[in-house]
Length: 273
Image (cartoon, rainbow, N blue to C red; front, side, top):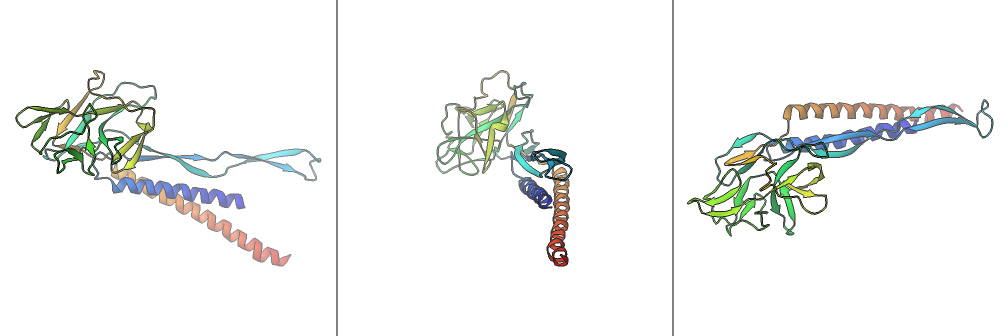
C-alpha cells in the first residue's frame, strides 16, 4: 500500500513540474525568439516481487510473483529550436534570423543559428532574441543590456539607431560606410545549450560554438526591422496543460484512496483485533 502511495505521489510531482514548464511557455508566448520547452517523462525501474518464507516455499527459496512499477519522473526539459514566425516591427534596431535548411548532423537533429552576446561577467552567451537597442555609449546591446558581438568578439559600436544591416549581417552607417560584421554562431546540436534567463543560452559543450559567417554550407538571412516570434503553439500548450492537470487530479484521487484505506487499517481493523 505504501508503494502505491509513493507511485501516486511521484506522478503528482511529475505532472506539477510539467505544468510549471507549460505555464512558463505560455508566459513567454510574446517573448521574441523564445523557444518552447518540451518535457520527457520516464518511469522508474520496475521491481521484481518474489514470495519468500511461505508454507509453500522451502527455506532459502523464492517464487516470482511479478513486477511492481515505482512511478514516473520528469527526466529532462528540452527546448524546441524550431524556427519561429517573422513579425515586422519597423524598428531599425530589431534584427531577425531567418535560417534555411541546416545540414545533416551526427545527432540527427537540425542545427540552429544564434546571435553571439556577452553577459555581465564578460562570458559568451547565445540568443535568438534580436530585439536590440543602442545604449548611452552607442553600443548595440540586447534589451537586457548585454553587448552584441562582431566576428572578432568585440562589442559593436553603431553610435546611433541610424544604421543598416544587410542579409549577410554586415552593419553599415546610413551612408553605407562599413561598421562591423554581426557574428552568428552555429550549433549542430542545439540541445547542448542551456537556458539562463533573459533570453540567454549557455553552451555546455567543449570550447565555443563556431561562427556561421563564411560557412557556405549554412544558408540564412538577417532581416532588419523584423523580430522572430516565440515558437510556442498556444492551442497545443493549453491542451497539454489541461491533460497535465487531469493527470495530477487522477493521481491525487488515487493517493486519497490509499490514505483512506490506511486510515481504516489503523483505526478500524486494528480496533477489532
